[in-house]
Length: 97
Image (tube, rainbow, N blue to C red; front, side, top):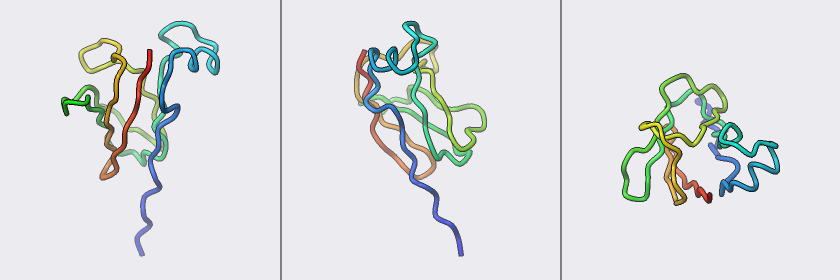
């Protein structure tokens, strides 16, 4: 029998600057990240509301993976709703700066 993949989830979601500062004690960009949990070494893709690929993982993701909210073009992603995919699972991520 095949084991079904565990449900992927993202935390914190929504991601907020003040929440990150409170929980991680970092007032700068080093404390800015979201964690994808139950990634099972699968590729992660993040898209903006228009469906454009904003970021994708380029290394093994392990069982969980922290994304620093920096796009593939090297800039911090703006406030908005994003969509993610890990394997055949998808979801929404809200970023509030």
